[in-house]
Amino acid sequence: MEKKNLDWANIGFEYVQTDKRYVANYKDGKWDEGTLTEDANIVMNECAGVLQYAQTVFEGMKAYTTEDGRIVTFRPDLNAARMVDSAKRLEMPVFPEDRFVDAIVQTVQANAAYVPPYGSGASLYIRPYMFGINPVIGVKPADEYQFRVFTTPVGPYFKGGAKPITICVSDFDRAAPHGTGHIKAGLNYAMSLHAIVTAHANGFDENMYLDSATRTKVEETGGANFIFVTKDNKIVTPHSDTILPSITRRSIMYVAEHYLGLEVEERDVYFDEVKDFAECGLCGTAAVISPVGKVVDHGNEICFPSGMEKMGPITQKLYETLTGIQMGHIEAPEGWLKVIE
Image (cartoon, rainbow, N blue to C red):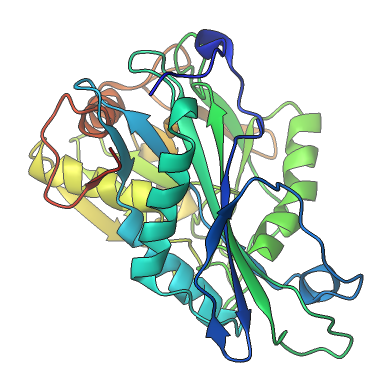
């Protein structure tokens, strides 16, 4: 298929409307067959559950063109499973996992012309989401829902290479104990907006959230999990019931152990020990890994030995290996790449 005539080298990380999107509706206790549509607009009642009580969950993933010309997505089955968990927590109907993956395939196939060519550094971002659509005025779950998938081409998250960022310890809490921090709900991200705007206003790139119960343990940022590298090259990631189970983070930990032969550990990470790590990074779908050069705790600076000029050596190996798998340079574990066409 001939690609769209876009400036792939300079495309930004912004919404670009593509040709088709997938829509399925839940009514009278069941999902309809679902369909692709050209209409990018959603019509709903002013009292829709999503507008009144933020009853919405979403996922994010990418489609890539590999070195041999295939279009693939990365581990969509895990996104499907995570959306099931999110839906259950917000009392929403589960969209079946096999249908979720099929919806991704259909939507990417219909927009294959927008999948950036290999070597451009760009990708096709895929956003599945679900929300309560019927009128709800009392505080209760909606009765009707819509599941949708749209795509948008996005450029590389880091133009000109990944430079280490500076983050601050936030005064705000990201998630409550026994709350919704472990699911991908829109309300979690709404809560983080004031915190990230405040961080940017103070000259920082991101926030480091501590656990809200004791404020002694590292959790995550507004949209990414932490990974740390010890001075003897062990990969450590925080464990918490209020952390979103990042698919990128789980993949990085597997790559570290099985491809690079590194020791990995998921455990409580106390803020007091952050100063002892050699490297730090944020991992997520958008950037894969964002290197962190400095953490600032109310004026007290923690500078990682990896510095502020480039990724640390272990973080770089993790990044290159995982992106190599995604792009087809390196053989992927079985089931990691879903071939679209």
